[in-house]
Amino acid sequence: MCIRDRLKPVLKEYSSLISELREKLVNCSTSHDLANIKSYYLGKNGIVSNEFLKLKTVSPEERKILGSNLNNFKQEVQNLIIRKNTELSESIKETEQVDISLPGSNISTGSRHPVNLTINRVIDILGCYGFDTVDGYEIEDEFHNFDALNIPNSHPARDMHDTFYVSDTKLLRTHTSSVQIRSMLSSKPPLRIMTPGKVYRSDSDPTHSPMFHQIEGLCIDRDINFCHLKGLLTRFITELFGRDMEIRFRPSYFPFTEPSAELDIKFNGKWLEVLGCGMVHPNVLTNVNISSKKYSGFAFGLGIERLAMLQYGIKDLRMFYENDLSFLSQFKGLK
Image (cartoon, rainbow, N blue to C red; front, top):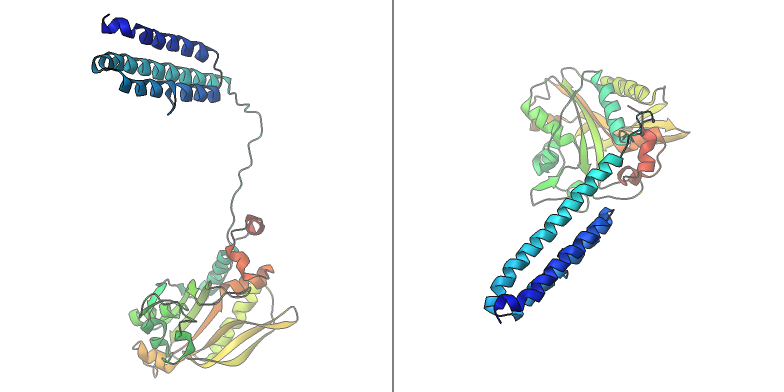
């Protein structure tokens, strides 16, 4: 008996399988059913794969003939399934109808984050008084973050438990004062700048975060005195909260200002500290090559999150960073 005669039953089986597939495709009406049929014939453990495995058990002469016919069988199965998939896709398109008289779907829009709202508000107010916005590096060196600001080597702010060090000499800035230093080194007085941005300190609880936002103001010119600072901040607080606030300046200490003060506001019957300020220390001016005999200036800095908590009645600082849409959606429409 010749090889082809011996293989007739197998080849006849291929033909029967094709006929069987055609019948199944006629009755197939959904993409899910088609996927099952495809898996049955072309899947990893499907009919075609099993037929290819059988080629290992036949002689080389038989394998040559069977392999050719099996490839044709596989190709025809694929073509039939592709054709049916196209028919189903076109059928779905034909049945899809759009009623143009129906109202459109509501599109959910986002909102500005309360931190960004507060930053923009502060920038708008200070911009009216001639302050320009300046950005700077978040990874700083010790000179711009500490040394130039008259912060001694023994100051606790330099310790590892207060500052995130990237290397022996690089760190995540602990305030945006480093931007002021770079601005004074690159520009000559008069200067009037504000420096918003992220700052980093090793602290975390309901009222503190290891990363938070700060904005600082700096004014350098001839004959600047503490009265200018008090006048500006008094107006700033009034405009920020939209009403006259009872405020007080308390003596304080910062290495980079002298004299130094903290500004408190009376909020809901309690005194709350909202910012630190003072006259720029002569040593700071010397460190940035500005004559302290010709020029003087003031500086102030405030935490944005604290202001936002006061303005919007937020009690836990961590809510700003939890990406809770039910919380953030409350600020829709605010600018």
